[in-house]
Length: 281
Image (cartoon, rainbow, N blue to C red; front, top):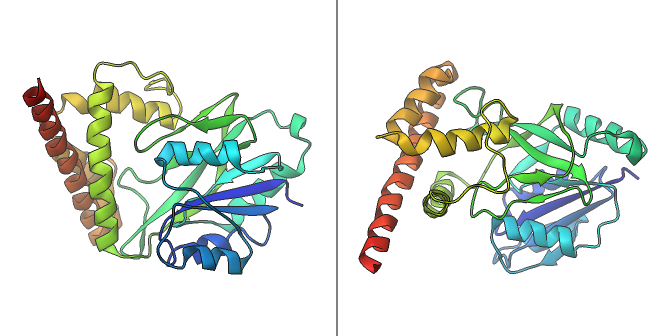
C-alpha cells in the first residue's frame, strides 16, 4: 500500500492515457479515471489496465476536479492529480512514495509543487519560460482544492507547500492539430477570465512577485500583462530571449512562435468580448 491515490480527468484520451496509466498503476493504491463522456475507447483502455472509471459530464476544469475530490470514495492520505497527457517519472515516484510512507502527522507540508518537462515536436523544452514549470499536484486529502477559474486554475492549499526534485513529463501525442484546437479553446476562456478579473480582486491566489511560482505568475498577469500594448510580441521576446528559448534551437523558436500566436488570440478575443459588452449596453 502506497497511501497514494491518483485522479486522472479525461476526455477522448485514448492515445495519451496508456502512458499516464503505465507511470502510476504499479504503485498507486488506486487510480481513478474521471471520464467526461469520451466518444473513443478511453474508458475501455482505463478499465482494461485496472483503473477505476467514473463517468461525469464536463463541469469545467476546476469544477470537474473539485467534483472528484468531493465525490470519489478516496481513502488514501495523499492524492495526486495527473493529466492524461502527463507521466510521473521514476525519481518523482520514489519521492512520492517516501513521503506517503511516513505517518501523516510527521509530514509538515500540506502539499507539494511538482516540476514538469514539456515536450513539443518530440523534444523537451528546457527554457522558454516553460521550464521549470511548477504546479501543486500532490497533497494531503482534504487540504487542497482548485480555485474556481475558467482555465489555468491553481490549487488553494491549507498549509505549507514544498517543491520536490523529481519531474513529470507533459507530452500530448495526439498531434499539433488537436493541440492547436485546445489552445484556441483556452484562449477564449482566458479572454473571458481577463474581463472578469479586471475589476475584481482575486480572492483565491494571493498575487505576489516574490511569492511562490503560482503567486508570481498571478502577479504578472494582474499587474504587467494588461498594460502591454502588443502582448504577443512581448511574450515572444520574453520567452525566446529573456528566458533563453534560443538555447532550445529550432524547436524552441517554433515553440515561442506558437505560444506567441496563442497570446495574440487571447488579445483579439478580449477586444471582441469588450465590443460585445459595449454593444449590449
